[in-house]
Length: 370
Image (cartoon, rainbow, N blue to C red; front, side):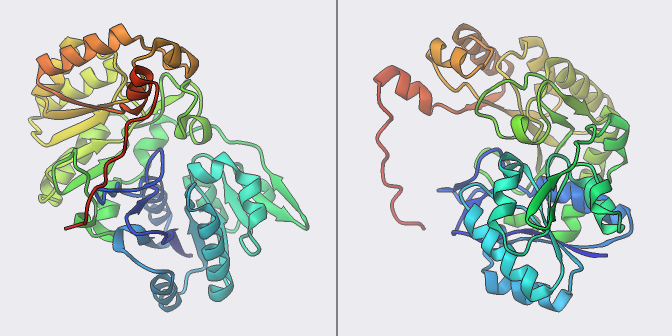
């Protein structure tokens, strides 16, 4: 099949490729990771893939329609957002009608309200919740809809939700081709940027799910790979991708590991093996504020620059309520240890201001763009 993967156009500098979607004041764009891994697997299965990440390319709906009309997909895969949901459904409907192809909604935002989103649509026939690689490959191979796990489909006026499939194992994750190679082929690397990372950078996943998995507000752990799941690629496979980036995409100056959180044991094992491989590519990661000083010291030696941490609040009552599972005392110790190890820790702090002042901080105008 010819399969188009679409992150639809919306507002200028809108970004849906993360655990929350927003209009970025800094023009931040993460890579469309979930579409990227799906595309890499579909190409592995023999299909022809066209990835269009419209926000990163500042494309309009007319631009997308023009490109896809020339290309002629058999299947349109649409990754909607939360803030852009109504917009994305309308675009998917119009494109499905214009292109006269099958279409399917995918991704964590769709997984948050799958039936409601599919009901909003006039023309989209299918939806996939949770991991999408195998369901998309089975749909593209012509398997009957009622036989595809994770799939939702229309049956007259009803929407049928099939049973869930087990999450991909470590062996299966290692079999997916490197997403960095797929992005090298399908996107403009320099369209992706964020103020915390070297430019240009690359996003990859070394595992799926969160070893904590309880925070009440987190999108991915409640819609995509849920609960206490943390299924990981082998460290050897991840470092093979690091070596590939160094040799084949030399313009990349750093890699962001987009796992929900890198556990202490995982971070230590990865760092130690990276040092032994003598791979000096810089990297950053997400983590909980409970990494040990010794682990962070080895991470620094292995080229880690930034640890992205959700502190969420300095009010312990709030942290209990949102099931954060880390105390303010531990967060403070972690911050001190990260600095001592030479790492930069970035954090969400808006709720800290609310807890201390009893009101959100005043927003200052960003001024005109330059």
